[in-house]
Image 1 (cartoon, rainbow, N blue to C red):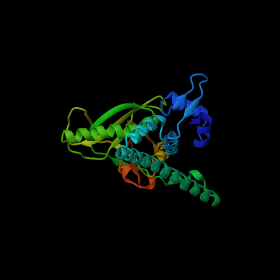
Image 2: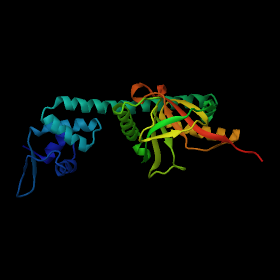
Image 3: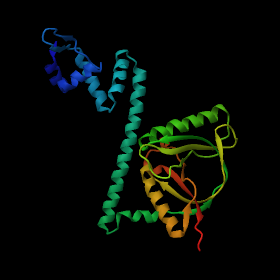
Length: 277
């Protein structure tokens, strides 16, 4: 048997953390002295604690770790492998995003050394006036916080694609997101997920063709704010105004690209010319 202090030292985990783990049922002492309350751990529990430490290093939450520990104890290797694969994919996405940011920063440093302003990249974002075609959209409208976006996109688009498959509907275009809130609200924004289809069924709406200012982003989604800013400046300079909710069309599936530079997103601003007096 090991005292909580000895167990703490061997595993590199504070006694405070061990007490908290016991509270939540993650790993409990093998024995507690009823006279003095001293906690003791069995030698065999070292392996479990080291497994927990390993899962923490993989950035699993404590709730996830509890479930994974149970899987390991039941020798559910297939389920463990699936959980690890999912976590690895999520971490790789973060790693790719970080690599993209580092590359972007390197470009900024190089431009600064050449005397080129950092924000000059906005001048390279092209804007076109296009006439869009009428569409029938299968949609789901939700109030989303920015923190919900990544999981929300997957959840609601998946439900739409599932309905298309079950009802044997005809897919006519790429997934889209409309932003209906007049201003950013950190509590939640009026967000519509939509997919163009042929049939008019329950859960669809018709969108007429309209004049739009359009830009294309080849890069990570956080760069979309630059596209929006550039489009707003273009509208002001060219004498146009936004008349309906802006929307994005996702030309590439982010799960099918290896680097952020391969992600292609189209941004549309429905506009009209400002009348001159």
